Length: 402
Image 1 (cartoon, rainbow, N blue to C red):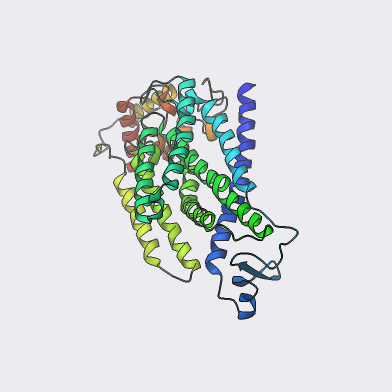
Image 2 (cartoon, rainbow, N blue to C red):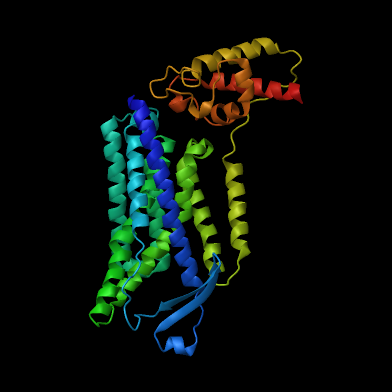
């Protein structure tokens, strides 16, 4: 019953996390587009203090949007704020982290092959890294170095590399990636909570008190908003990264994480420039080429080919593969699993018969041969020799069918 309850909690908070994340990132993308798409207004609008405007059509209606340089002639009775999208995304994300990776630390977070941690140690380290990362980030952004774009970018890259490497030396690849995402999400939500919203409140307070707004708040908000903009696509990748063990299960998983972060942030730059009417398609081409290069570099090593299959007893090899799968995989992938975590076959994959193995052969190849993602955390102790045997059987079957 406990596992059943946890599954439902995971489902509910994952769904809420996706909904709030869509709302937050959607609002972020919209306002970046809005700010970059403003046009020079006519003089009569400038006389009213309007800095830029634009016209849009959506949902059968025409919209006129204007941005004031400092303040409107009169503050409206209703002023819409955009903050709960960020807060709700962070809260649901942390709850999901606790439900999946902290309650299930022995299954999803701790990998004894990497670091022999207890559940409490793993949780303390995870939360400690998230909190410490936010503090260090704030110190960097609050320093005089923040005024130099090149210097602060270099510092943040070094900072990100250190976190990625540290996490992959402590947690499972999957757990390390999700904690890197939790760090990014915390920095982004922290930017909203500590800088962007206080800056907006300071602006409104100054307007209400007929005072000149403090320019430093606008500068800080601009810096942190820029960081949030470039971190959205890396964060989206990390949210789905658990489906792609070829990245997090690689020996150089921390470098792969940094590479994908850089590629996705670069791709975001194309759209930011596009909003301003600058079309640099070379950015997308470079991003695509970098992705292709990464895919080639991390491609799994090929198992030595078996050559001609005429002299191989296919029935004997198939029986050996069935035996390996039954011993190493069916504790989870069975109609009635015996695993202490999975009470139903993950993703509905059942591997009890040879027909089942034929059906799921591509997935077996991807998860157990090309990467060592399965068996999960290698709980059943599948050996490299056994993986090679499965690989040769897959190659033989491929030759026979072609």
